[in-house]
Length: 415
Image 1 (cartoon, rainbow, N blue to C red):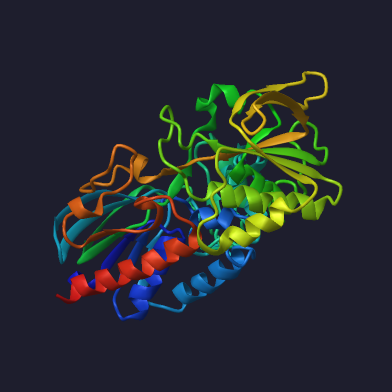
Image 2 (image 1 turned 90 degrees about the horizontal axis):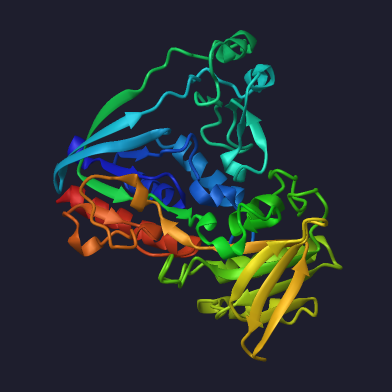
C-alpha cells in the first residue's frame, strides 16, 4: 500500500539514517535531495566526532545499505513542491531537475576531460573549479556525472556527448514532476553556513586569507582543493600561524541569536589539523565561551595544554589585511587582561554559525520559528523534524534523532 510508504526530505546523515532504519524495518521509503549526490554536509568534512575519522567511513556503509535495499528509492536534484492530505495519507509533488547524464554513466571522466566550460566548485566552497560536466566528489553517490546547465551554454554539451562511449549524455532531459503517496514525512533538510559577508568587521569576502570553518574542512581534506595541505588562498603558502574566531554570527542579536553548538568543537578539531600537519605551527582561538558538550571536555583540555595554542577570551572587533604581505591583522579585546590587542596571522578561520536550511526550502505545511527552525509541536500529524531542522546539533545527535523519527514514522504508517 502507498500509505505504508515514508517520504524523507533531505539526503544528509539524518535523512539517510531515517530512511535506512525505516526501510530495513520493512517499509518503502522515498528520499528527495536537492543536491546531485547524497551525504549532505557530512560528505564535506575532513573528519567528524566522536571517532575523528573521515566521513567516507560511515557514508560508504550507508550507501551500501541503500544499494542493497530495494525498498529505498531516491531522487537527487529534486525538491518537494507540494504536500496535501493528512496523517497516513499524504499526497506529495516532487520536481526532479535534469542531470543531463543517464544511468548508463560509468564514471569514466571522458565528458569532463572534453568539456570546454568551467564552473566554481561549490563542494569546495568555490576554492577551486570543475568542468561544467563533473562528478561532485570522488566517493559521490550516486556515482554519476552531472552537467551544470548554468555554465554549459550553447554547443558546450556537444563535446561531452561526442566524448562519451556509453551514450550516457542526454542533453534533451527535461524537468519531471513526480507524485508520491505516503503515510508519513521526515523533514531532514539540514543546515547552511551563515553568510559571513554580512559581518563587515570580520573581513570575509574582502580579506583574501579569511575563510570559514567549512572551507577549513575542505582545505584539510585529502580530496579537497589543495589535496589536504592547509595553504592560504592568496598565494598558496603554508598557513602556519592561524587565528580561529569563535561565534562568527552566532550569539549575536544582529545575526544569529542562538549558539550554533558545533562551532567550538569544530575549531578545536581544526586546530589539531593544523598542529599535526605543521609541527612548528601556532594557533590562537578568540572566544566568548568555549563550549564542549558532554564527554568532549577532555578533547578541549588536550588542545588547551598544547604550548603552541593560545586561547584568548575576547570578541574580535575588526579584521583587516596587510596589502603588501596579505597577512591578516586581528584586533580584539582581551577580556581577562582588559587590554586591546592587535596581532598578525597567516590566515583566519571564522567559526561561522549554523543556519537551518528549512528557512530557504519553502516546504509546504511546516511551521518555523523566527530563526528558521521547525516547530514539531505545531506540525500536522505524521510529519517529523530531525537533526538540525529542529536545533543546532552534531552528527552523533543527528543520527540518534533520525532513528527516533524512523520509529515514529513506522508507528504512523501502521496505525
